[in-house]
Image (tube, helix red, strand yellow):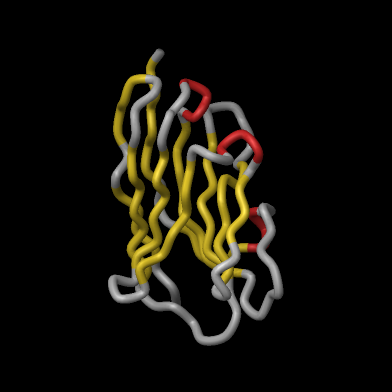
Length: 125
């Protein structure tokens, strides 16, 4: 059973930065995906960034060049560095793990088996 615990959310002004962390209880062997999703009130959950165990990363278009997903294996922690934040980035952010055995990672939430509890990010204009 993989457990995920997010931290690092908060309130910032537009243009500011935040770094989200996700402590992962264990990583599986073989191929897998880890990802960050977000969900704003009244909106569907959407994928923000994914990282395959092979190191390949993907980003949704609206965050490319601003967000960076990374993983520290020694600390068993997944990160999301968010720069140049915009009010439209306001949402609850979730880390997720899944896609075991997959060749590539998807932005579909149904592809992920394990989820954290979420951390709130609020960006004011």
